[in-house]
Image 1 (cartoon, rainbow, N blue to C red):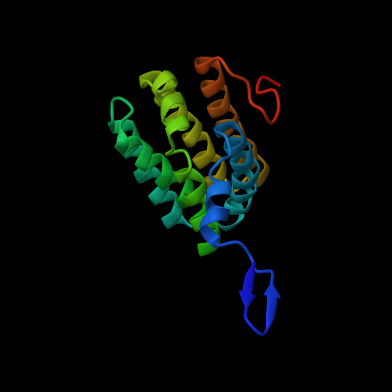
Image 2 (image 1 turned 90 degrees about the vertical axis):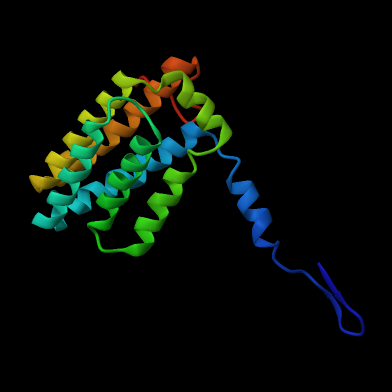
Length: 176
């Protein structure tokens, strides 16, 4: 509310900082479910628009991921790079930014606590294989397969979180 002497009382929008604080309260399972939906659609579209250079870039990131023996800050950075790269195939900067911001939300205390329970060499190996399945489907220009592979990857992420932390997704049962 803004009061202007001699003019009246005006209702204004809340400051952007308040909105951002409210947005940051979402839980990790809600975030992964949103990513599953959005990134599945992006992967399907990427399969229709992929160019040879995009495939080379995905291969480079996957190679670098496989060269790192255990989860580190570098593996997380490469994971982010892979997901934003898939969005980048569409040539839409807004989608790249959105996927990057959704990914970055995992860098909160709750996600970090979850990560310390489930991230290990085997979980990152599984994630790398899932990324490879996404890459292969996009490279084959098979949109439904690309969508399914991305959604399966993010479902498996939910399963790894819930199984190793002893929680279930609040959005839906993870083990469907």
